[in-house]
Image (cartoon, rainbow, N blue to C red; front, side, top):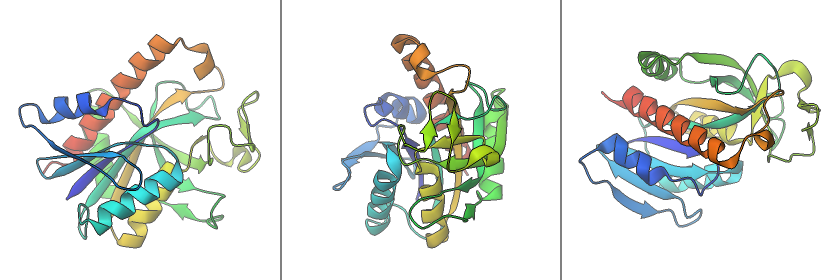
Length: 228
């Protein structure tokens, strides 16, 4: 079975989005034992509620694998947000972290690439609704307030100018899990923070509105990309 893995703060309301995706079909729901994430299942598709950080992503994916909710031949699409370190990636853009690199957990020097066919499907699904997808070299932090990231200058002492943006390691660890298991995987993220437009400058209401809009957009595109 295929899966859409949502990334970001676990409090986000994904159940509403799942309802929009499956429409009249009532999805089943269960909780993962380790991370407590919700897994919605409908139409041969698992949709996982938001996971924050590499550890939570890895634990959730491994439990899904052990429960055979994902298995040989499954395809994974991870969706969420990222922070830009460059004016080339501006607030509101949708990006594909490809290649994706990580300086932590013994992965320094490793570059991971998305499955080209699955990424092409995601790109097409987004283009159908007028949304372009930008590819670039992406880095990993281990948290929003990673001490190697300077939020005053929007720079990373780990990567310098070699990457244009970062997330909290979720994209890399998802692609690395897929590589180890021989699964096709793709990642699409929206830019929620850039050197000119900071999260701290956006009112809470406007931020939640933007977050909800992009979560629906990316989940819808992912579901379409995984549809036969």
